[in-house]
Image (cartoon, rainbow, N blue to C red; front, side, top):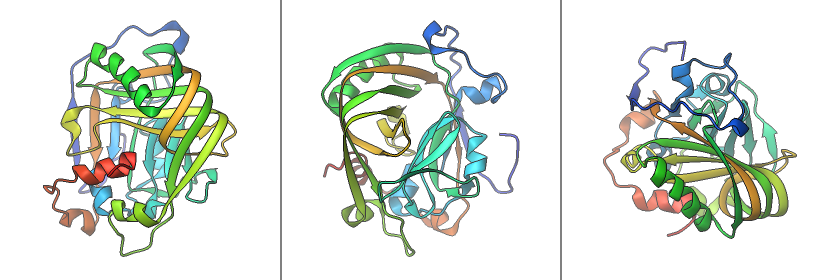
Length: 277
């Protein structure tokens, strides 16, 4: 990232791994977008654990986040909907079911983004639930290495797509698990064309994010989307981006500074991610 902000705290970790072979069907990266190092780094704004505590105060603008990547997931100031970034555009899947491209001036309290360079492509068939999808993806993760990060995009027609979003919150903010008890909204779609954006975080990220897979969806017509709870499809085209760098940008607000981040939030994170108790 080319700019510097006073008192910004950044945590970076990198693994000296190189991925040199690209699958021909993936296409090539646009060399004008980001340096080589930037393209192999996931940039995360804040911790998921800060969000689960209730820090919904946006700390980075949409315009800033667009300089960090062209694909990603997250949320917006005041927890106002689910963030889906695809091909450089940031969309909001709102709590009322609407989807919109978001203005550059809006702010983001939490997200993960990177520049998507396809390292592997394949066709997935006959997936009858999100657990089956995770099992299929985890086979590839086991082969390629469980200690690196992965972004995926998966395009197809989905027999069923079950997503959720949230209604915007007002201060004083409640913890995320409490918000989802009252202000979570659900949307079920059938035979819908669109794109799944997914992020895999390794196990050692358990104090900074949710480990394993996290998926968001946006329809081709950009009218539907959200955080995926379940899905089914007969066939979809899957592309992988292996990413071996990670950088974190922490918020500077008083709420975040006062959190006790040693508290175990694993149960709340499971509830937030899957809806399971």
